[in-house]
Amino acid sequence: MTVTPPRLFLHYLRRLDDILRRVEAFDATVADRRLHPDMFPLLQQARTAIGFTLRATCPLAGRDIVSFRDDDYTFASIYAELERTMAYLAAIPDADFAGSDTANVRTTAGFAELDLPAPEYFHMYAVPNFFFHYSTVYAIARQAGVPIGKAEFDGYHRYPSGFTFDAQ
Image (cartoon, rainbow, N blue to C red; front, side, top):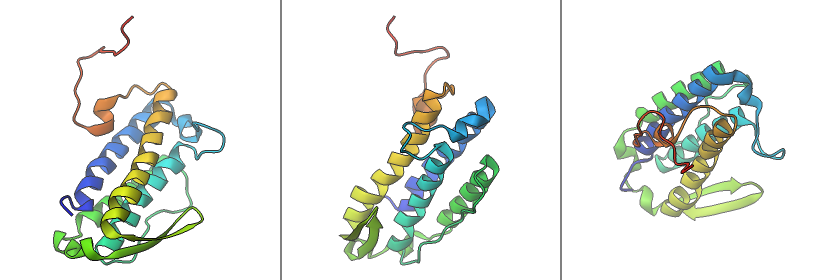
């Protein structure tokens, strides 16, 4: 792998933490909002994104998949889960991923059983699923009026105060 999973996910887990803190400061009830009635609410989307970082990383590092979630659906619980997940990912040495390019990963995707070569598992299944749930957190927050933008999403973009893409 040219980029080890922890580096990729640590960056975006920090972004997720920032977005969630902005959501909570803006209006904590946004935690229960959904993009569509049959989709998870914001906090469950965040939890699922966090879980995908571990589902993606652990098998590639030759480890059993761990979870740091509890049954409490609060911002405090999600922040604790984020902190524990980031600490765990940061502690995995790059050397643990040596040889992972030749491994296969068995998992489930909904009701489908998958057995994928590790690069396909990571690039075409795990990373897109992480970003699906991460982006949904962002979309719910934006839809609710939380003042965030691309800079908060990726941590790289910068725009002057008051900037808008609306060409009114």
